[in-house]
Structures are given as C-alpha cells and as structure tokens.
Length: 365
Ligand code: ADP
Ligand code: MG
Image (cartoon, rainbow, N blue to C red; front, top):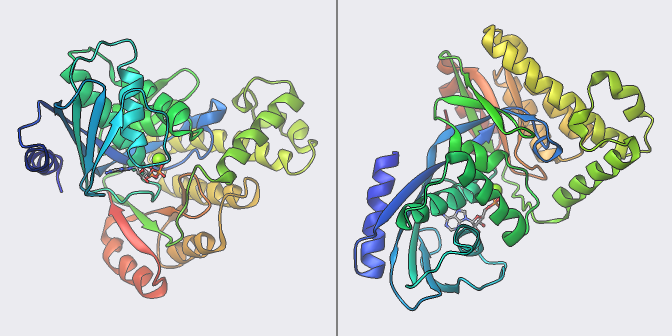
C-alpha cells in the first residue's frame, strides 16, 4: 500500500473504532540495513535504507484524562493503557512508551485514542517497532502542537524502546525511519548523529527475504552482544569500540575469546561501511556487493548472530544470481538483504521460492 492509502485506511479504522475522525495522522516507513550491523550501539557507522512499506498512526482525544485507548489493524482489539503505566510485555508498550516519553511534563487534560495501521511485516527485522514509535510520536506531537525535529523524534523513539519496552537497541532504526528518504540510504555516524544521503544505483534492487526463523530482540542474544562489547571496551580502555580502527586489530585479537571476535566484527564492520559509501559514490557496485558478503561472514564467524537457515539462504541467494547478500537486522534468525540487477529479480525470486519453502520475500526496493 502506498503511504497515502495507508493514511486513508488508518483514518477509516479510527473512525470505525472510536466513532469520530482522528485529529492528526503520521506515517513512518520500515527500513532495511544495507551494511553496518551491530555498530549502532558501539558509536559506529550504519547504512540503512527506508522502505516503501510502513506504518500509519492516527490520534485524537477521548476518554478520561490519563487513559489511552490503543488499537492496531495487526491485533484488532482495543486496549486501555494509562499514561502512568510501566511496561507490560505487550504490543501496546511501543505506543504507550512513546507517548509517555513524549508527554513527560505535559499537562494532558483528556484521554487519548490511537489507531495503528501497517503494511510492514511485524517482527521480521524491518523495524516495524521503530515505525510505530516514530509515527506515534510524530502524530501526537502535532496533536499537542509541539515542534520537534526529525532527529528529536528519533531520539525520543529510541528512548521509548530502550527505557520503556526494554530493548537495548541503538539509534539506527529510529533515525533512519524518522530522517531518511525512500529511494536513498542514510549514511549515519551514530556517535555524532550526523548523516548524509547516500544515492543508490538505478540499475539494482535490494530484495529482503525472511528466513522463516523468527527473532526476538529482547531475548538473550542481543543483550549478550551489547554486554560483550562493553567488556571489550573495558579491556581495551576505550569508551566505545568505534574509537578503534583497523590498526588496532592486533590488540583486539589479543583479547580473550569470544570478546576478541565480537570486537573484531565491530571494527571491521565500521570500515566496511566507509568503504561501501565510497564504492556507491564511485559506482563500484562489485565492491559494494563484495562488502555485503564480507559483512555476512563477519556476522556469522565473529559476531555469531547468524543461524544455519540464514547462512543457507545467503548462499542460496548468491548461487541464484544475487551479487551481494547478507543477514540484516539483529540476527538470531530474521531476514537477509540481497543485491542484484533489476532485470534478474523475477527469475531469482522464483528460484528462491522453489529452493527455500520456509523463506518469504518481504520487499523489493
Ligand atoms: P521489528 O522492529 O523488526 O519488526 P521488533 O521485535 O523490534 O521487530 O518489534 C515488533 C513489535 O513491535 C511487535 O511485536 C509489536 O509489539 C510492535 N509493533 C510493530 N508494529 C506494530 C503494529 N502495526 N501494531 C501493533 N504493534 C506493532
Ligand atoms: Mg524493532
């Protein structure tokens, strides 16, 4: 569904469920990360690309002060939460957590009503969570006539996911879906929050394929990697792993295992993002594709966030004619992104469908 259709449909749903028109709506896309995995919570570089799939949120006033009634086309029920709530391990946490962080210190005299509608696959590594947070904050900020920049919105959304939902993610997802432009990638330095638009080749598509193995970022694996990175920083006496460059690899390698491998992934992945951005500028697509493959190998061997089904899918994607392919997102299952000339996509997709019955093509951009 195009962005405008999604906004129309969320308005209709709001009207049907709450019996009146919403006062504000907002939209945020999903994203796929092209390169720079797990670098964002290490102060490093990332290269995400907003998608043409996304999430629309409609908001209005209704009900008693302090209450928030939330509904989503993905879950159908109308749930009641409070602005004084804590996390409840429920899908509404993403909405209520965003509202609580946005409205901190604001006098809210009436209840709120929120409707969410999406054409993104949920929990597949395309950042449906950041899209919900950013669209909720953007629509509600408009409702309260608060002036926030796209970067401010991204920061609040990340806070909601970290502090309220309890997922220790970096800022990549929220930044790319709040600030990015569809059709381009966002080259972001997560430490300075400075970003540049990276133009993408007209000749190629990125195809996102779900492996059929679902992930949950709040499960142990992701947090474990975050704490392993902290351990590596402490051992090396640096504030963040992005303080290190390729010339520091000998001291990284000398750390005990597996901390050495975790840190090596971050250091080499940061370097790959920089080289990939130059490759795009130089239109050296072969190098760009090669860096995607190296990134996958590093995620598999050093960062240990891949699973056999994902490794097989990456290899199958390359065998079927993709020039580059890699695990994208937090890992432990989830999706891959494959890079190929546009004219190859149809035949390639048929091959993948036939060879990987559990895999699902989620988006072609
Ligand atoms: P991803 O961000 O990769 O899609 P996450 O596990 O980070 O996966 O976030 C998925 C969670 O976000 C869902 O389980 C749900 O709680 C919430 N969510 C995302 N999109 C929606 C939606 N349209 N309606 C309701 N909740 C949503
Ligand atoms: Mg998410």
